[in-house]
Image 1 (cartoon, rainbow, N blue to C red):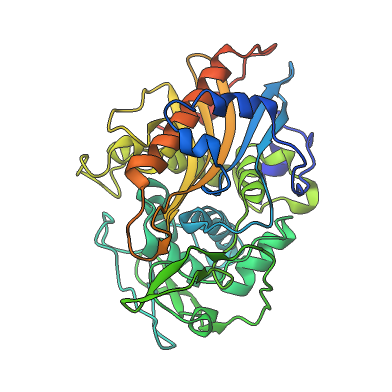
Image 2: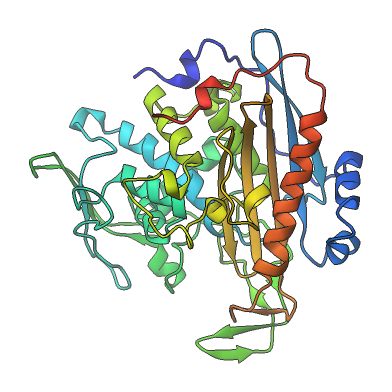
Length: 418
């Protein structure tokens, strides 16, 4: 298999991805950007700790051969401080699922191969098809499309079951994301033990003949707690009853902001990853990822999301557009994965402006929960969280528009597929 990470001739290994420790000081640039938001968001600017605010902003500059170099700015970044990553874990699940499919090439397995999911342990559910696909069948590629366009939870759960908890975590660690912990499915109340078990899955060819059967598996890795400040809030709801104590997130997924952005950088610029941590993805895999990471609901036809009042352009694009139902201009493309749950909002993006030659990475998390009660579905997403992230994105974009660049970036490989 030809690996794009080894054969993209215009990209070389120019940046070694190493984990960042807690920052001793905040970026003066980011501080000035945040200060400019004080009139509209005085509470957040004056008390970022209350809102668990963390930001990573990376400028991208090209040399005459279009090779990228990075300048990264941090604000309140702490690699060990817990925040709930929510749907941001779907991004590596999608990537690693594509990679795993490639490992079964000899069996003629493809990302488009129909699949069914069985039941092997308590709490599991089965899959016989998918009503949102044109052929009515479930497949890895269709699940990935649903993950990026509308952040579908069941789609992620099926990829989690395909990967298995052990393989998911071990592969992330092998790639250099050693702090990541993926412990559970999303939006279904399963125990830690239930989440160790993954369903049996069968793949078929176009004529319905079985290609490959993956049996049920139980994960055995010890997913140690490597985060701190895991107790959040003053109260939480459990089985409909209020518990007057913080909610314990030490048994939840953990995906810190630095590893999120570095993983995104690896996907956008594959050859900047060290050779030892390259992904086994093809050129077509990357083209597929770029298309669906940036695709808007109105641009998606399989699956189709015709309710544009609900699935507006900014539905899964928090930076710049999360607080508006206006359409995103064609010359701006946003490659990202958002997360929203338990009062935490996260976005991890690579944004390009093909008209003005702008590109940058931006990752941030904010926590909005004034009553400090978890699981009650009373959060300030619409009134504070989304407006804040949208304005932060607009401020950074405005700065990028005015930033001097010696070389205009060639962004043609990121243009949407027709």
